[in-house]
Image (cartoon, rainbow, N blue to C red; front, side, top):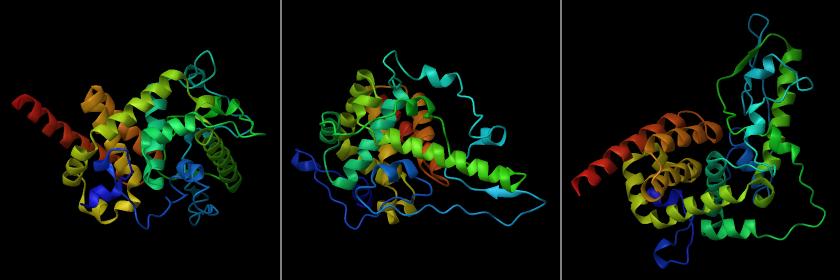
Amino acid sequence: MEASLALSFSSPNAHLVFNILNSAPPSPSNRKPFYSFYRNFWPKSPKALTFSPPTKNSFIVSPPYAVVEALETTTESCILPKRAFSKLDNGGKFHSPRAARELALLIAYAACLEGSDPVFLLDKRVNAKKVPGYVFDKNSLLEYDHMSFSGEPVQVKSEEEAEELMKKNEKDSKNEAEVLSAPPKLVYNKFVLRLARDLLGAVVKQWNEHVLVIDKIIPQNWKDESTARILELSILHLAMAEITEIGTKHQIVINEAVDLTKRFCDGSAPRIINGCLRTFIKDYNSRIAAV
């Protein structure tokens, strides 16, 4: 089935062996953090920022991450919001379930591209030896925003304001790439690493069944371009596995899945993910009630 090609990895279990052929890297314009993380797999393409023709002395900027706050503050005068500190534990590491889901998504996506088992890949990255000379700037964790979503083009009043917005956007994108490519032990606490591993284990356990379900609920164009939808299908697998294996309330899981889609995917993907998961929940609850 097409869906079985979209999210693929190999596993010690013989029945969980899949392969991706001719898969292409995600577009750097709308999936920059993941693209930057896999810069060792493909040559890094230069990012192009374009302006639309000016209308009524305004410029329209379409950055990878639309930051509304940049219209009110410059990069130099931006004040770190108080909520940035609450996402770190006493050891200065991410400790929220949102961070665990994001890490699990990152690893699931990498496992597809590498053709490896996601749990094994997470363990490999967590236990990897420190690279000599590598220094991680912990300040990047304070500036990292799990709730930074892409969105509609931002309208600014002058070319100078547009330039400031682009500078801030480039700084934010560089910071996200720094965090997402850092050794997990430097970024996440033990709770996050354990939850991410549980999520990936749940994906592996439910893989065969959920591949068939996903093939029924995703739109036809996603099946036709399966290798271009690895990220979206990874989100579906993680969400469905968390509901069925870990037992998290589906309302929470769907909201988290939609937020991850808004953050790392483009276009109508958040709406489609929401619809697919609600269809899955309806059928899942019906099957549970019938037992």
